[in-house]
Image (cartoon, rainbow, N blue to C red; front, side):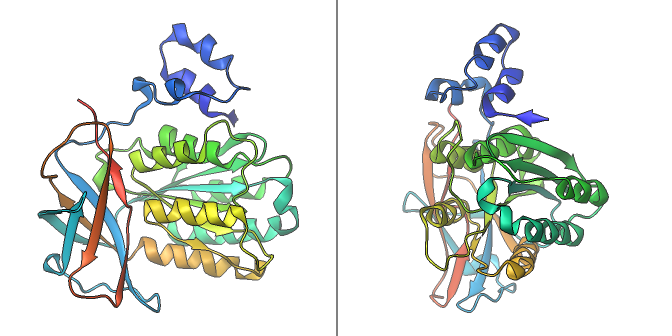
Length: 315
C-alpha cells in the first residue's frame, strides 16, 4: 500500500475535500494543508509529560535517581514536578522506517538483518506494537501497528531498494496517522527508528514539518546512519538534528557489520527511561512551541536526553 501525507490527509478530511487533496499529491503542500485543524493531534492542556534518559559521560545508564534529583524549566521558568516514575516496561509503539532508496543499495541486506534482530528483541506479543514503513520515491506502509514479530520480520525481508528518498514524508505519516493513535498518550512509549543516510530529495513536507508532527505526537526519533564515508554529510546533520530535538540519539556505524550494535543500543535505551509530569505555570493554551529544560541538580557529570519542548494546544 503506497501512502503519501496528502493522500492520508484526504482520509481525515470531509468527503468534499478529498478530491482537492488528492489533486495536490505531486505538489509541495503549503502550510494551510499541513496544519488543517482536523489533522492536528490533541494534547492535554493541563499537564506535560517528559520521557527521558540519564547517562554518565561514558554512556552508561543511570537508573537510581529520584524525583528530588531533578529540576525542570519551561521557557526558563522553574516548574513543579507533579509525578515521577522510573519507566522500564511501558508498552512500546514503534515505527521502523527504512530507507529503500538507491543510495543504500550496497548495505541493504545488512539493514534488513539488523532490523529483524531488533524487532525480535524488543517487540513483545500482547504488549508492544510496531509498524514498518519503507521510503524511496514515495512512502509505503508495509506492516501496520501489530505485535506479530513474524509478520513484521516478513515485511522487512520483502523490501527491495530503488528510487529517491522521501524521508520526511515517512516520519510525518508514521507520527500523525499511526503512532499518535493509542491513548492515553502517557501510557505508551512512542519512538521511531530511522535507518537512512538522511539525504531527503523527494518529500512533499519539509524537515521542520516532519519534526513538528513528531513533537506533537510525543515521538522520540532514533536514527542509524547508513553513511559509511567517515565524513559528516548534510544528511548526518539532519539525523542529528531530528534526534536531538525529540530526545533521541543518532548512531553512525561506519561498518555495516556494526548495525546490530546500534539497534541494540536503542533497545537498551527504550527500557531504561524516566518519566515526569508537570502542570505548566503559567498555563498557556496558545498553540505555540514551548521550550523545556530538564536537569539533574548539581550533577554536571550526567547527561539528560529528552525532547526540548512541546506544542501547546490552542483553545
